[in-house]
Image (cartoon, rainbow over all chains, first blue to last red; front, top):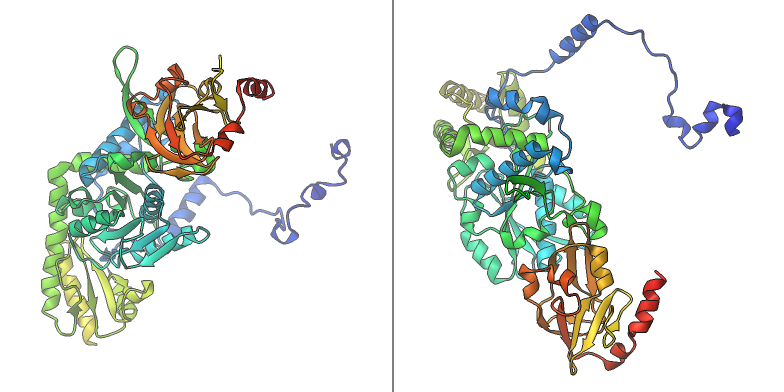
Length: 419
Length: 126
């Protein structure tokens, strides 16, 4: 065969691959039996610590995932379904996307949602780009409430674009102001006045929200936001060591045509029966190419499905209850920690949802390490993300934490703050 | 097929001189290539364009295409009927499907456009 194609050797065919990255040897250890592999994998997995109680937040939270979410989403019809470009054989998938979009509209108080984006951080970038398309102004203002991880993603994704990202400042001449609610440090706010200020200056308001918080808090729609984005991990997705996660985006109907991502819609067939299709596809990059709304013409279908199942299971009342647990338990923890004042100082001055920052008498990373020894994941040291001093710690509380957990935590943190 | 009294651009726009105001649309050829038109994004009255600037967008089931200003000028009117009835472009590309009107245009730019014979020759060569 080599002679037929005029090559001297197999190695010659690999010439374009640099020598230093080529496989050095084909010697692979002998195969293991299924039983031996199972044993090996279990021993490796046993090195993970999964029993610690988590108080870490910062955008990704340890919420309870009802068993029905796994059971339903793991059905092969959902788990292995392909992209629904051919509607006549993808009605189930399309209907689930349509229902997901509908429930996101209800959650946010907005009029139109897409089939999802990759995650909360890139969703913020997409919202910024959408605002620039809508206003023609290549300038974006970021409010101090925005998650620093998302802020960094914004820098990375706009690094080679002619776009100015300002930290704070006037909405005048800006495409949008991007805020987060609750803020990264936990503060809950009402941005309705800012929405008016933005609109008066011809700019849009983008709100990055925490889905569970909307069980209790004013929605982006109620505040007058133009675009709402979020990380959907808190809606039935495991923390998963960083993913896969879920980017949520919703907007007003008048902005719909500049929205990125896939859109499912309901229509009728020629016999008047309801059917579902993908629509407004000419916005997407496989058709519009360099003029598309985004490079994205995909979604996180399985993650969106889990979020849909989670929200349907809870319903409006259930979500309110989960949010109330998160809020009340965080308030209880704050009250316990206040007993250790002034050694431990709560930094937030106004109301918070389920997350708050404290200043410890010692280095926060050291305290976190010592708390690990007590089976506790104490929180996120704020200096690690450039949002606080060396002794500052961000603590999150979810519905999973019991009164006992909270009492143990505050006792432990107090003890570690004394020594 | 293509009206004799109109002028044509290489991007398949047609222009009608309506007493100093120039009416612009897309040709039957362009409408056929696009297929059923589902949405038209028109400029705003007051927008200013130079010749060949992107002025509007036409979306069909399979594509989205720019419409360019065949002559420079200021938009003095847009065809609001296209909001609810974009299919007017397919039904009557030269009449009901008109898209926008330009004022303050250069007569020389209009004169430089193809007449119907030149346009039909151009189409044959595509």
